[in-house]
Image (cartoon, rainbow, N blue to C red; front, side):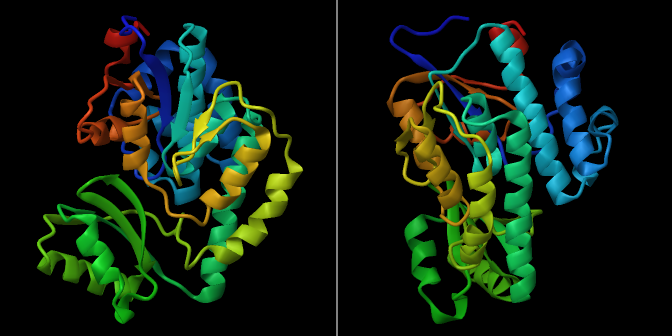
Length: 312
């Protein structure tokens, strides 16, 4: 691998909204001995044979939690493939629940504990939403600057709606009560949004107005697993702070559930601080596609081009 002088390698892990690229089965078949035990663990948790699901390319048919567990297991396998090839990161970050992979890769906790935490985070938010009787809707607003979106969010008729993430300067993720979100989506279209894309998720991750109670419910799970000092630092997607201790990882996981994140600023940090290549460790190429909008471009490597770029 040809790495520029003074440049470091970053690993990033995908989360919500991943669409398979078509190359997942190829790398799985090449490194089945690595992927298979991890996908088997995920199959035990979901009650679904995830290897069969991958082979028939029907991951999109899985329920929401099972999709998340599949992505976690496949991303962990991709990290292990890279490690076997002596390709190691200097830093790591995770998109939404991709943080569980980033923390697993850094040895912050075990693979099994990662599945436990991810599953319980999902369960806690789901219980809170059911108790509130909330029908959650999440959309990606494309082609509108954040200041216009933030101005609309100040209106009283959007009290449940929150900005929970940004992929780039004109691509922002908004979530809230379904009825208010439908009105909000119409409002951003009138303001000139190029497109509004509905996400296939019912869980308001990072939503401070819905997920507050889930923080208290989730805390016991965080405290019952074994945490380790990370072998390489993690970037907080909340505030881009560099996390280097086990206590910082624990606090981040708790806050991450209920705090808006900013993937765009996280990607900017990587580019501005000479991380090149940035390797997308998991299914799909969504993070690479987002990286095209970062002005200070780095070289992005993913499952589609890793054979040519890395020889795997």
